[in-house]
Image (spheres, rainbow, N blue to C red):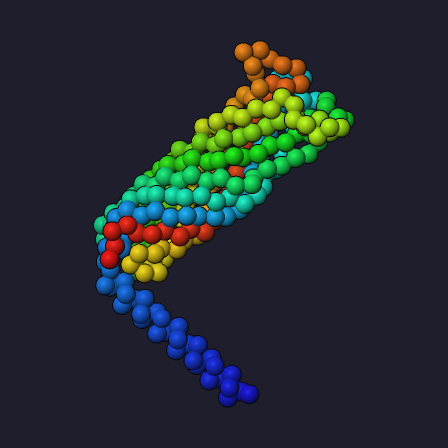
Length: 235
């Protein structure tokens, strides 16, 4: 058995060594793998913090915090260029999924109502800067983010929405990740993104404050996701 284990370990080590040399050789054949346009898809998990403050009643009686979570996926498109080890580019992305939360409303209404939130989509665009070595690249990114956020009170007795509203929140994102070129065309990566969507007022019809309805909502969130990109124009 010891001999078998040693042979297995030796075989695995040899295979890893061969793959390493193969990756280095392949990268030498594609010095511009990090230059050009690309399109791809991504999927991951989001967890966030949402603060909800009624305009009337104000203060603790009208305040609550929720933690929406869920799966998120989407598409991205970008273009980049490599100078030596430095890679500069710009990327735009759209993501959506099932990121939501439901729980007791603010203390003033918790006896009869739940508060429900749902993140319906995120649009982001910004630059990327990377450091590439052979077929690997580490990068950072950041820029503008816009989230479409739904909030509503739920009448617990009938399970119906009350004072439902959807608003676009403008904010920013910051993050980074690592990518590896699997072939001349395909690039796989893993990244972390931090979003801050700022604060927007929900449900204020015709500029009028509705007691128990008008609220200021702010949200930030974190995402870990995998991504797969197809390099456009590569052989």
